[in-house]
Image 1: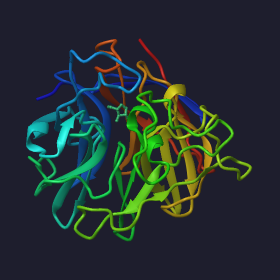
Image 2 (image 1 turned 90 degrees about the vertical axis):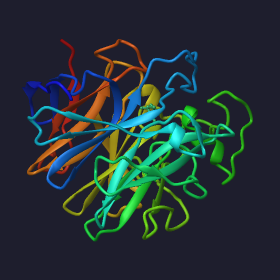
Image 3 (image 1 turned 30 degrees about the vertical axis):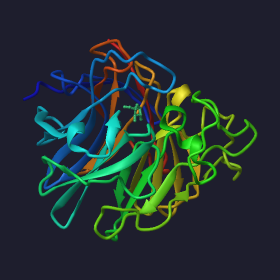
Length: 344
Ligand code: FUB
């Protein structure tokens, strides 16, 4: 069972909002919160951060998570509830280590937990686990999604009921090692295998899910992110290029693809008119938070949009994070007001 949630909007302007919010959960370290409304309640599927003896490195080995918990809230104002452990790495036959950012989806009364983990060869794959209710426990499929790779799956259900899975992450997330269509690693450094600065940035991935929600329903496609001049964002443009933490939400007929810029620590977004893109870069949704990583989800609860995110307020350590939430504003012109997190 969990504690309180609270927040204070310091200043609310049209273009930017300064936001102070408190950790939603204090019993465990939690991160990468993927939030959804299922059956009228808010469900949050986060990473479960843990202390580790594994040494910190540039590939994120210190993010050594081994299970998932599910959380729920009856409303944005109510206390959050921890439903306990719903999947353990011991029960995922193919997975060896590092259960990173998950997401969940519902179809025909079944619930699907999508998660990345490294396999026996230390290659990140995407797994699926299934339950008949949103709080699990979830039973893992014996194998990862066929031909899956990299990290941070996020599933979007379009208004016609089609489910799309978005994913990818560079550096420790290994997406740069799949540029030829096969895993090709020229070295252990997470900075090897990247394009030159003046080449197009590495593309996040999208695929329709199969009807049974357990596999890709089509070959993965690159997502093109364009700048305002219509040119592909370049690999050297670290302020704008995709790094990890893909998320897709839709307002009206506009598809909003949001993501972390990694080493520049923003949650940025780009818009398009269909789920595959191309998407045109629009700006920053969430400025850097405490800690190296920035990772979010966006969900509408009744008539209000929220962003769920994390920082390191409780621990001061980059791999021991705590989830938070704040209101999100779509402005009349369709752009999103930038949130600047403030510290007490
Ligand atoms: O939680 C581990 C990794 O850190 C996630 O997969 C990334 O998105 C970053 O938040």
